[in-house]
Image (cartoon, rainbow, N blue to C red; front, side):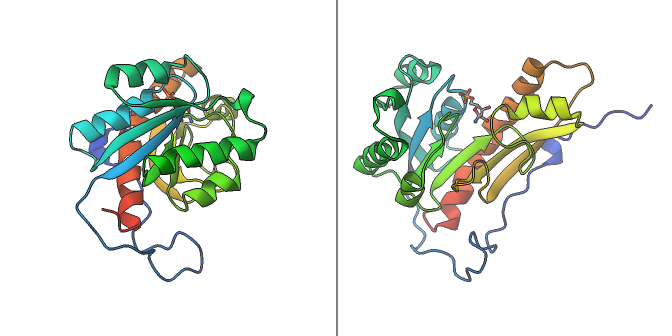
Amino acid sequence: MPALVDPSDPGLAVQWPLPPQQPIHPGDGEEPGASSTDRRLRLGVMASGNGSNFEALVGACRRGELAAEVVLLAVNKPGCGAVARAERLGIPIQLHDHRQAASREGLDDALAASFRAVNADLVVMAGWMRIVTQRLIDAFPDRLVNIHPSLLPSFRGVDGVGQALAAGVTLTGCTAHLVRLEVDGGPILVQAAVPVVAGEDRAALARRIQAQEHRILPLAVQLAGERLGLL
Ligand code: GRF
């Protein structure tokens, strides 16, 4: 039997960044705006859960792998794992409890105001378990990035890992992409492939996918910043 090749091996570089010359919007000929600078991006992060992707971003910034700093974490659940990580890492936290918001739009307006107040250049949805509205997308045009645990466009929405297992695919992975109104439907920035190992349970597969998420999310942020001429 031939040896199994692991496509998520970093040496195989299984990532497909959107080429810089490819327009984000079909029909656009021009790259958006500003001139390049050598300043660091100011990142806002939104999280609802454990926060491992949030911490991976902070780590990439602090190791100098990403020309950025995380200036604010917004959470919608008090006491979620991301809050404890932010406290340990010394990152400011704001709670935007969706149960207190009058509407989805109201929640998104409040989030946008918080990120504007700290002059965030880009905002990353790192495990944000709420559907966002056009209000937040318009507040950060082509500056709102999401991470999803499947090879989009397959297995959008809730439980991308479980959907992949149920479908019996032998290759899945994760995708970092720009956010559009269609859930998990925006332009893809970076993907990484993860093989499904026979007999593996959902938790084990999810762990291996998350390890790849932690690699590609900083790459995607860097790419998004470069595309906008911010880096
Ligand atoms: C990740 O698997 C991400 O793909 C999904 O939510 C999960 C968040 O994990 N959107 P964590 O909170 O970053 O550990």
